[in-house]
Length: 435
Image (cartoon, rainbow, N blue to C red):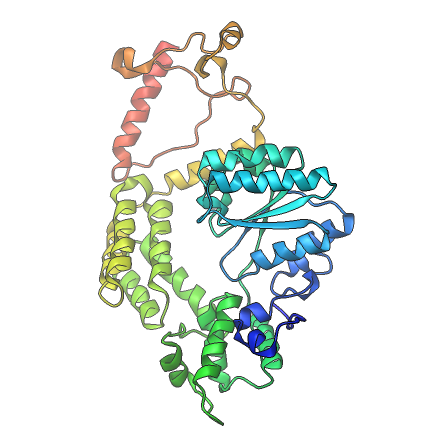
């Protein structure tokens, strides 16, 4: 976000545009809050200076400048700019964009294709980008609020660099509000505490901070200054009641998480209610409970994840304050459930192994052989269909040959994982006997 665009629009048309739109930056150097990308030594600044742009995925929360930065990149690299949204576009729209980009390329100009919400495209649609990325028809810049590792094809990720956009900090949001005041030619009618409260309400979203500022200016009478209570009435939103550095937010969520992990339902419920009372977003708490279910309970109680997801959906359905009881129920369930980080630790170990051995091929006997050539190369030779084996278990080795067998998952003797451990020990015994 930055100073007002120069524009030939009539003044009344310019003032009718939303403040966030009027304050869009005109150069990468004017972008605030993403100095690691757009600062003097930022990744994107270096790319522009080198004269070489590659395809990228912009990952970050709303209101952090992903769309704006993509537009600025196309301008500074002198590329044609095309924008589509995965929410409203389909295969036919993609074909038209690709055809236009090919026509431009024939005339010597490359296209930067910005795809908003790219994670909404299915895997087949994501695959359609691969040929035009590989032959240089387009430089793809996809934007997503979801973790690309889970939502995007591995083939797409291998051809694009993931760049993380950070939520705006307090300093960055203060800078945006100052620019807004310069553009409007008047200060925000807020006292110091109300101004700090508005920044907390924005929750790292630059667009939200400017939208809130517009609401305040519209509501203010001449010479009126709003305090925190008046601000909350005007915007119908409550900021979390934490200290200015938001240490309180992180301290309380840490206390909640550790109370759940420590099997103390009373302390967990207390901290959950502290955060409700402070005005924390209940859906944020719902997401944290889901995380606790998979990190600290795992397969010791497989119902924990289902219950947390159901509680999150119940809150989404009932709203506040009725839905908060569903989150409280999930919180108590987690605190009283048997604990295990077995899957969590196994995941981290397997991820390390995947990074270290990512080039190894699976053994040929477990690969399909859909063609004669692949059959001739030994694909599928010796594979045994487990359902046809005694105990529905063949005991084959599935790891890459050069890697050898590894053990990542070591379930503890607690909860349901006690039963899983028995199964694994039984299969290990059969594997030794049948090898």
